[in-house]
Image (cartoon, rainbow, N blue to C red; front, side, top):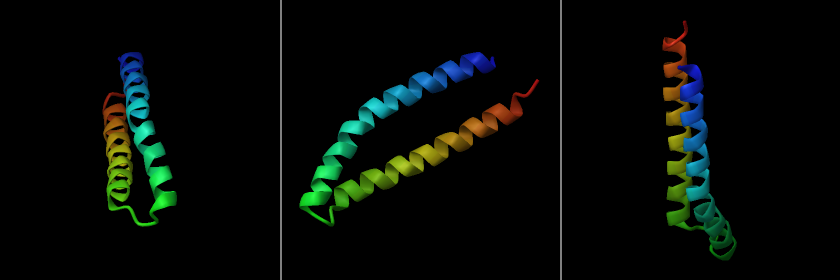
Length: 67
């Protein structure tokens, strides 16, 4: 069960990273052009919030499934 969940997590992390990386690169370029870009700030806040939320769920899942 633990191996299965780790596999799902790794696939999900790879997928998420591939989808978000181009957005973050675009935001980096935009940040140099425009110092205050609300769209990029919103994306970064959502990304960080998602990471925190996902790690909390993962921790709860692992802690409750200890044999």
